[in-house]
Length: 330
View 1 (tube, rainbow, N blue to C red):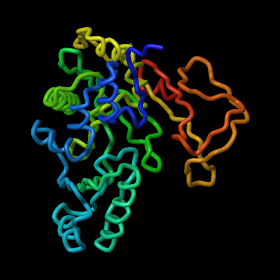
View 2: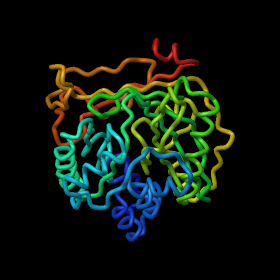
View 3: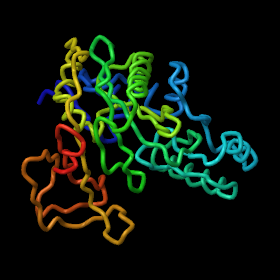
View 4: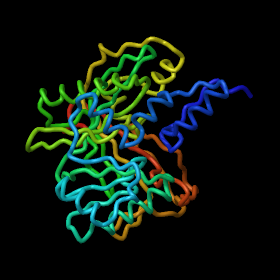
């Protein structure tokens, strides 16, 4: 059968520029950003360089094209220059994978060895980013949507600070407790960076927010639709996948009149061990039922087996109400 277009979801292929080029070479429309935009923003090292060029705030840190060339002395000098604690992570990574936090000089070599080993195994890359680690920072992100003409819009923000094992578990929109001035600056910086790289289609600018200092720092960009896009859909009334398809078709869409209505929360339901470690688990779903009056995104049923070959998230529960308190009560 003829395939006109491919939507990659939000798995590994959604941020694979080589895959995008293969799709386009086959004469098929890729529903997402261009391969060039992925190359510029998909890896943390290049994304930091682009953010710097677009005058977007960055944490103190450095990009390492090949982290394996640093010996113990150079590693220590780098960490001391940045100032501990330091987070070391694979440039191509995400979701807390290939990442380590250095809080003491004695941990430097072990952290580098661990992250390099995981980066090569998972991403076939030795490119790393080392940057200051903010232990109590909030994780706030801005949903951007660039139309077919390359004009980017902000579809407000989300707070994804509630995490377990470096994986998001609760997400909400809009991010609570952010001063209007800071919120406006966040949105403006996201649009500025997206426009700077000629971005089109859906993407997410992720930031660390220091609420005590009321300062934010660019973390990375996800050049794809996010798992937590649902809460943005609930507060905007938009179907983001529909908008992605329209943009890929060349329709000149405009989102300047979109408003933020109410508050939305999402809880990820994951297959996890119940021994207190909450590590991913496998097994058979013996019973499965969905609550009424809330949005459920899932692809599972009773009798289905959860294997170790895929992400352990099996469903998402999404609620929307006029305000945050009402949403939590649902």
